[in-house]
Image (tube, rainbow, N blue to C red):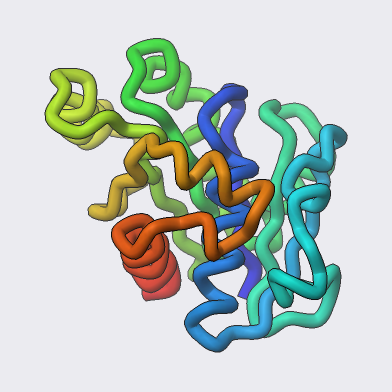
Length: 185
């Protein structure tokens, strides 16, 4: 199964989310590969092959990190071949209002039988932005459903890109495992 992480807007935590979903799937017993087509190569730079157990090719699941644009050949190809397209977004108004273009491209290129989902990432619990974001996304007729699991903005998530899965506390690990299962279902 191919899972592409795509968003036309930068700064939404796409690479971090791709990396941590890959780690959580590996924790769940899957063999996971990560393909990084983002020119910055952040996600692939964070992988410690020995510590993380993520390969470059040949996993049961291949996760693809893409650059924050919609006119890059790697992004378009990742959408076309994906079984799941994950569109991370923060609850900021700038991000939420910029999702129309991304959702349009994803819907146009999504292969038959594939699914696309929004994921609220970098949320601050109990704030108006976080509370209002699901209603906004569901009311915009983007044609892409929002997954139930939100990823909270926490220091352990940021630290994980340097220290791997063990940097996450139990709550964050559980949240990423829950998100990963939701993506696969």
